[in-house]
Amino acid sequence: RAKHQFKMRLTLIYPSVGRKADKAYVKAWQMEPLSMAVLAGLTPPEVEVSFYDDRVEAIPYDDPTDLVAISVETFTALRAYRIARRFRARGVPVVLGGYHVTLAPEEAGREADALVVGDAEPVWTRVLDDARRGRLERVYTGRTGRTIDGARPRREIFRGKRYQNITLVEFARGCNFTCDFCSITAFHGGGQNHRPASEVAAEMEATGSKRFFIVDDNIVSQPAKARELCRELAPLGIGWVGQASIHVARDAALLDLLVESGCRGVLIGMESLDPANLRDMGKGWNLAGGTYRESLRNFRERGLAVYGTFVFGYDNDDAGVVRRSVEFAREQKLFLAAFNHLVPFPGTPLYRRLRDEGRLPRPSWWLDAKSRIGEVTFRPKKVSPEELEELCLEARRSFYSWSSIAERLCDPRANAAGPLMVAVYLGLNLGAHYDIDLRHGLRLGVGPEEAETDGAVPF
Image 1 (tube, rainbow, N blue to C red):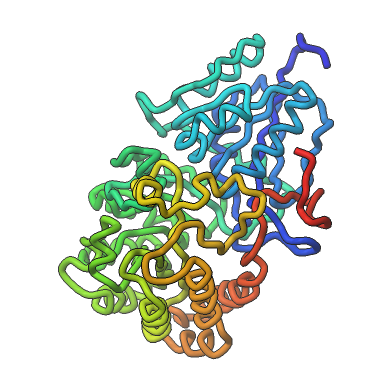
Image 2: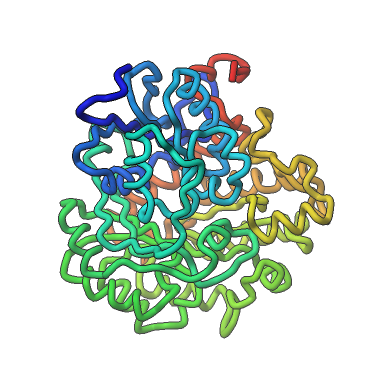
């Protein structure tokens, strides 16, 4: 491979979580990886960029390239490291970045020639310049002087790949809240950085799409910024969904603005029906000034669909808490719901607490080739890990049962507010029904080249 050539070749890779033998990848996990398009957008035009998404296509390890960059999350870390080893064995330098790398840099450093810790924007061109000269530094820290305005994603890297029919866009990074289980706060250290609302609206209009997912972890964390965005989006005639904290339900004016701007639904982290659990996780404000029922009524009255997420495994949780949560979600006719056990992500207060209490049998559970999606990797107080896993699985099967899907459709204000919403509701709920068994028990780190076997790999 020629070291001195006119055009540097960069390969971007987005790894999969893993897969089951002879099974398709989990459909709900097949959205455009926006971070890859942002990285491509930061790359100078004189660099030749190739992008491979391990979830939907094979990675051509033998194609000539000068640098490989892999985005790493905790659930994809094992697979990412295996991919990195295969390239490094061929003499290709590898740079790793992403949430997991920032939260576990010592571990990631063993698997790469260089790391990007924090956001890539401040350091990416320097990484490429150093790679071109063959002088990569071990760590590039992109946390200082963060700005995300002007980072226009190069979406053409997605062409020809099978993704869900929705366009992802980013307004802000981070969240003003400090929930103890959340890796977002651990990564960003609290607070948010916003792009100019006008820039976001211009980007959305330029895509030509009419369906968007605004990927911010909490789009209403700063209400003034949210109002600014809504005013920019209102003239575009688009539909969008996003993630919000439930306190927005008590701001009638902002709710109305969201609807006027094209918002069709919100993902709300309800997490628990137990006030003590909410206090433990740092979300005691979830019930401040009202109940979940009152808040959900405010969303429903405006035709906003709600995707409610619940998390189990806090010290007050037992079988009754899980079952009451499912009953509540069905009774409230939530558009979608997630019933997950706590995941101790590295770098979070939750992880440190469980480790210090001796409740993490495998502290680096994400590196264990026997780890599975759905497996509880810590010791809960009131139930066994196996019982909690089964309770969460039962909850999903109940909520996405045929009878529940039919019952929850009988909500003319939100779930069945017109033919389009009915079609979206049925598509997503039927998909979720079939995805339950596809994702549960899926082994971490297994790629398509190993899926036909028992998952044993040479790396």
